[in-house]
Amino acid sequence: MLTVLFCASVLVVMCVGIHYQSLMTLSRLNRKKQSRQRWRINILILGALATHVVEMSLFSLGYALLCRNDWCGHIQDAAGEASTDYFYFSFVVFTSLGFGDLTPVGSIRMMTALETLTGLVLIGWTASFLFVEMQHWAENNLAE
Image (cartoon, rainbow, N blue to C red; front, top):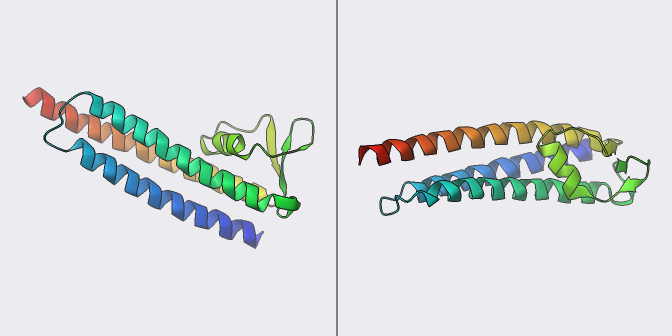
């Protein structure tokens, strides 16, 4: 269990750092004076989505490492067999869609709980960021 908690904590810290850097970079790109085109909003959204995919990929790598040889548990499909579809599982957990066809078994369950909490916070952070950036863009474009 301690191994899972340590691994999950490292992944959470990495994801928060990646998220912060990504949003700051996107914000700097959005605030450049020479580019007032509407496509900037699309870049912001696509950049935010790409950031989430990177974060989910990190967690899926964590599952792959921890589930190796059933070391800290495994991901089980609906038929009760072990599954190696870690990216899909991470996507479902990160977005808090809920378990359906894949379920964690063993101490790996703690990592799924931490990934869900992280996903909720980071998705909320992204929504807030996009709102502020779009508001800033609209204020500047309506003033011109």
